[in-house]
Length: 450
Ligand code: SF4
Image (cartoon, rainbow, N blue to C red; front, side):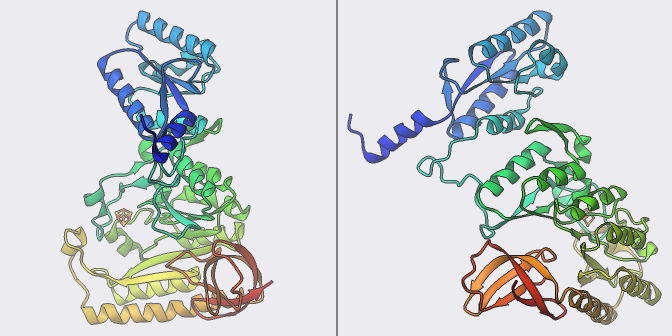
């Protein structure tokens, strides 16, 4: 047989790839689960080892149907531990984790049946997948459409709310959260690949984990709940910027503000209020419509004075009176939000709000939009002016002929402002630098290296 350079490389890669031992017990349903786990692991470049000695780790897919099957499963786990030492347990007996751990406390992880992704995530954690550009067309962090130094991280899909202007739930269904260890694994991979800022996105970030009943998962030997606060705290340990988007003002959001004050995650909340009039919020069927948002904002700023609040609003919603619109302007004056986007209401095909009475004529919608934006731009400019003279850490996004274009902790990419550092062409994209801020308009800031 003649070996080409490529076939030799492939053989070498196979020889150095991590090896998994696998014991599959139980019924055909369990067998199918074993096949799916093995297929996934093999596709990622793991080798399936026929011996305990060659394996780097062993997965035991157990059966818990009758007592004899339980005993056989427990014996198999014991054998794998004795012969290899590193064992992940899955399958029906996994539902009785306490019983397994009582007999074999040293197992690395226990999952229930049909937990394909959980088993694979646990294998990744204890035995990272091989990466070789010859074998894999994907970089370890996956394909990203963003620049290398920041990435969006989606933590859930769908939404349990039914805001009357929105058709997302009818397209994407109810909330489906990713288990927290799965999210953390992706976050860690991105950080290891050089990402400096993670932008946490979903339809409703603060509802994260509700569908999973805030299930606790094992992450690096710690019990972490699939819950907004726990996720924020775990992400805060990665040592990179973490920015929260699409957070609704539920009371439990208050718990996360101290993490911002302590510098664990960025002091930034993208919190779409949409309106301030209780009647309009009710017509919109907004989550947390009855919360007193002004008091909440005041309390957040007391805990974390540097917090940046971004929000979006809709003006000209069906039935919005001039008085209700002015109520919104008063709210803006009181709330002193930093960054704001606003849209004139426009009917989306299939949205319930289309059937509401008293639609607002287009010219009035546009007039309210212009008044709203003029009102807010003064507030935004004034808030940026307060930062002039401060030294802040910024992240370099781009280096152009005139200098470097950066963002501060207060600026999310694409939607917020930028910080321009004239002449600083020696800086590198993805670098953090300290800048003395010297000028601002209603959107952007200018500064020089401190
Ligand atoms: S606007 Fe947001 S919270 Fe409301 S239904 Fe749509 S996705 Fe859900």
